[in-house]
Image (cartoon, rainbow, N blue to C red; front, side, top):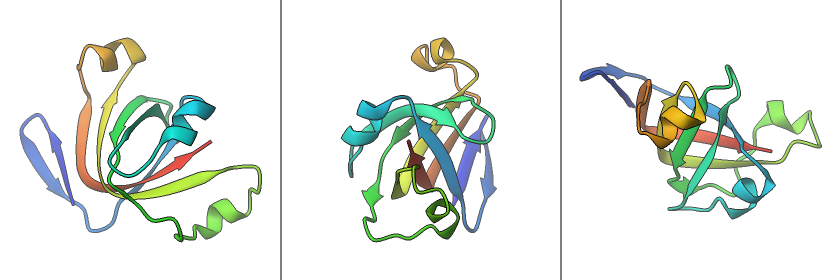
Amino acid sequence: MKRKTSGDEFDFEFVDITVRAADEDEFEEAQSGGYSFGYLEVNGLSAFVKLGRELKDKSIPLLERYPKTRYKYFKNCELKVAETDELLDRKIYLHIFEDISIILIY
């Protein structure tokens, strides 16, 4: 897995990043090959995700403990992260992650 930031590249073996969908519509409309807006679960930064392939039968044991949390799991995604929604709209990113797995939650 590669993360690009300011022209540098870093290798990751396994990366699953959790993104909370901005609203229910963003979550419901998320599908393979689409996109979604939301916020990184870990720190609340704004996120734009180009979604890869959805794995509909992927089980995530940690999330199964929270029955009210809905989730979708996607492989081979691109994630663009910015400090705010405005900076995300202006394409001023802190990081761009490529070929990663995304857990989209709502």
